[in-house]
Each structure stands twice: as structure tokens, then as C-alpha cells.
Length: 425
Image 1: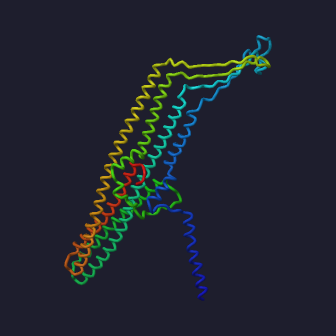
Image 2: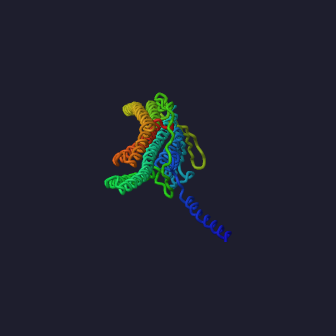
Image 3: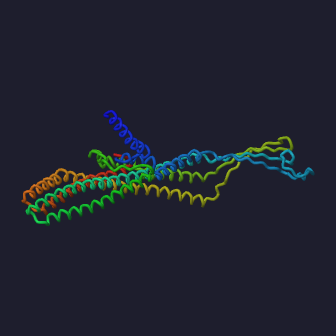
């Protein structure tokens, strides 16, 4: 019987494991850390993908922007009615009076093609910058939502721990009430406190579900993918990496909004140069041949030039190009002022959150733990009343939640800093 029992146990173990393996294969999981969510979003988010496609399309415009225009080919059938020769109308080249073949090539003024290519390249750089702006904003939202989701998840855990503690307090109060040592009010207050805590737990679970829904939206609402609850926060960078001078230098070099503005300025500068180049004419060169019946009678060489007479129109275009360049420069200056102000505010907020965490972890939380332990011991011996125990329990809960919020706040401020810098710290 023992071998048979062992065989049955083995079969049942393998059978119970198979659905889990199949389910894991059918329903991949993401989450648990903000890094995995960012990696998934960068590959799968539809809006960011659209911006990348637009940037690739803009890059593809560079080569044709500087290319020569396609040549043109023409055929003229002269005297196709054959009235001069006394014949009937015809459209065959060898059966009309004269057939003229022409091929023409447009030639822009020297430097215009290069300027058009540079303008297209600047547009591609601006499109790439806009794509990175979209990603920076998306990554910032994911980091912010992840920190909030983490707070909700851990707060739910704290509420369950407090419920267990209140159950123990209720048991102690019930036992002391049965012995006639405390009034019935202690038992009722313990039950009331537990009910209120359950109400807070319901609210937190609802907020946690909302945060999970927001996160799924930020990931592009992936189907057949299970979202894991947040498990850990990112490690914070050392204080040396938060030097405001070094970060300002990185902003100038890496901020995607500034990069897009710089590309816009470059494009405006090239557009201004092209507007002034339009004062000079463009050319057309052509080659023509004359066919009479079955022989080529002559060859012609053509040269055309457009005459830039519409000076008022060109002056307006030049004025427009100048003002567009001024606008691009002003926009970049405004963007720089804004991101530097955001950086200073975020660093100040991060440092304040760090000081708050140190105060809570080193001083307030240990004091709250000692107060709760002392109150519990005092209540069991009748030295303190039940209200004192509840107050100590609330202080303990508040200290732990404040510490949790301080840590999450640091993550959110770090996300603010990385957003304005344009890269991870």
C-alpha cells in the first residue's frame, strides 16, 4: 500500500502543478518593481510608439529634402493634322510634321539644397525630442502612480496588523470585564475602534484598486497580463548626486524639452538662411531634339532662370523667418527657466522628505512603539485605562503611516527630478 500511496501522492502533486504552469504561460505577469513597469511601457505604450513612428518618419524626410527635383520629359507633336503636307491627322511621331522631345532638370541656387536638408534634419531632431518628452511624462506618471500604489498596499497591510492588535485588546478587555476589573465600555470601545478600522480598510482597498487601474492605463491597458502589486521602492541616489549645480548642467545637456527647443532653433536659423537665399534665382537646363519623319533633324540646348521680382513677398517671408527664430529662442529660454525652477523645488522637497524620514525612523517611531508596549502592559495590570491604550495604538499607526508616506514622497520627488533631467539618476 505504501508504494501505491506514494504513487498517488506524486500524481496528485504533478497534476496540481500543471495548471499553475499553464496559467503562468497563458497569463504573463508584470510589476512588483517600477523598473519592470517602465520597461514594459517603453516597449508597448501606444502613444509613445506613435511618437517614435513620427520621429522615424521625420528622419526619413531628410534625404529627399536635399535631393534634386525629378527631371521632366515632354513630347510635342507639331502639325499633327498634316495640313501642310496635305495628309490626314496622326499621332505617330514619324507621321506628323515635326516631333520635339525635351528633357528638363531644375537646379536650385547653390546652398539651397543643403539648407533644405538641414531644415529637415532639425525637424527630425525636434520630433525625436517630442517623443522623449512624451516618454519622460509617461515615466513620471508611472513612478508617481507606483509610489501611491505602494502606499495603499502597505497601508492595507498595516490595517490588517492593527486589526489583529485590536482583536487582542478586545480579548484582554473582555477577560478583564468578565473579572469585574474594567467597565463594559472598554469592550464596546474596542469593538467600535475595530469597526472604524474596517471602514478605513475598505476605503484603502478601493483606492488601491483605483491605483492599479491607473497603472494599467499608463501601461497601455495590456490584455492577458496580470499586474503584480508593488513589492519594493527604488533605492534613492546618494546625496552627492543631488548637487544642484551638477544637475543643472545635466538638464541643459539632457532635458528633452530643451532638446526639442534647440532643434526648433536650428531649424528656424536654417529657414531664415533659406529665406535670404530665395533672393537668388533657380535654374532649369534642358535638352531637346527635333524629329522630322524618321530622322532627327536638330538638337537644342535650353537654359531658363526664374526672375525674383516679387521683392515685397520675399521681404515678408524673411521677416517671418526672423520672428520665428526669435520665438524659438524665447521659447527655449522660458523652458530653461521653468525646468530649473522645477528642479530647485523638487530637490528642496526631496531633502525635506528625507529629514522627515530620519526623524520618524530614528525618534518618533521607536517612541511610539515603547509607548504602546508600556500602555499594553499597564492596561493588563490595571495601571492605565483603555483610552490610553487606544491613543498609543493610534500614535503607533500614525507614525508607521507617516514614515511610509515620507518614503513614498521621496520617490515622487525623485521622479520629479528625473523628469526635468530627462534620465534616471
